[in-house]
Image (tube, rainbow over all chains, first blue to last red; front, side):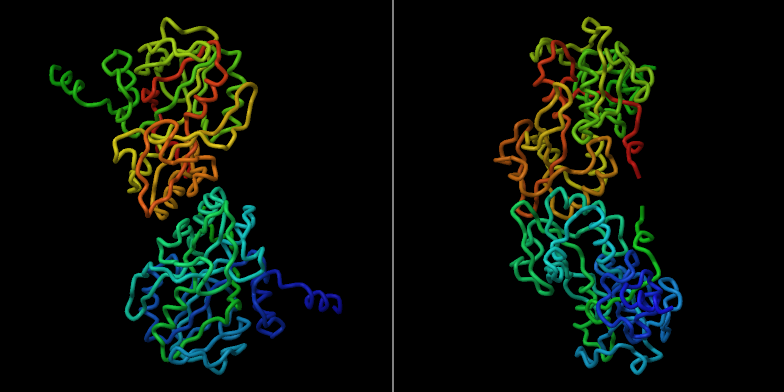
Length: 270
Length: 270
């Protein structure tokens, strides 16, 4: 028994359920990267019911930046399609609570913030396709540099729904052209976690003036034999929600994602 | 009956079999482009048995430029896997006969040239994936310009087999980045007709000094919002064979391909 406790203290949880249980009992409070390898992690957005229908429509109109993998019923903290025994109020390491577009709290649970009109949205994230790229032998520069993937606001508009509208945000990974072609093939298999790139080569064509100055994350070097490859990014829905300045909403704290019971490989369409 | 004869004179054959029969009775002697829409057409190479084994191995080692879709037995003019009632000696509109690397005849049939040691190779051609690209709504610039696709000798080496070796030859089609990504998806489905691109963006990375000066075919304009996309090209095996200067060989006359009974859609792997 002592051995088992020691093992738990030093090894990251190996399943989505184990990860959520560790988080729920406060034995894991940091980023979820590396937890439960192979299990799908998701971006979280929680909105009042009054905004939820428009946001749901926004996601369905913009599946590449907003690949919706789970939606809760109003007031319901479960998402049975993604995880058994899930309590969205306690099972992420940390949250951000927003009022009128301003962050007002960064709690480790939502017990004091939960309301009966809140609707939970789980949106696929790039962790899943990045695992597939790594398994395909493709280097991810931001991992090599141990920094955050560079993200850019583009001149491409999302399709508006109610109050929700704004530019597409993309993440960028430099690759040789041969790896870029392979990456299109690999990520095409994962439409529910952003899928194929939306652009490659010339950044200026999508309104990126200076590739060395990302709007979020960190700049990474692009070698002479590489081109930048751009994927629709989960920061898009976050930035679109913030532009609306909803009276109340909740997101995950950056890097502290929802860990699900679904495996990345389940999300491959072929 | 008179009506039927008139119709045949003015409408291109609609099946591979009808196309070959028209060619065999000399009622079609020109290019095969546009004949039997939807049916696979193939590059032809006919080599003496002494070279055939090495060439077969060369094709298997270099499947992107040399996607072998049919091989005959020595002396056999049939390819039952590709077409019923095929006589490779009469069923192409025109051939080129080579001795020691020099073209010595451009006959409409091979009856006086056939030998018992000849082995027939049918190699997939870009017509099939181009049809899929067009059906995907992607413009093909050389078709818009009504010219031959531009082709380039690259600095990428093929994998040698016996005497066969040499640079990869590629064809180039300019596209917007979004269409380039879609084109990767579409052509990935067709590995037996060259498959996915081998390169995109920066031509200098594969040894192309001046994109406006193709080694074969015609230069086409590349617009400011486009990148060049490169596919392995069936000219590769031709140029590799010519470099060997075999004592005897036969190829199709440019544009006068083997029309098969297989449909392009059969060659899609998913």
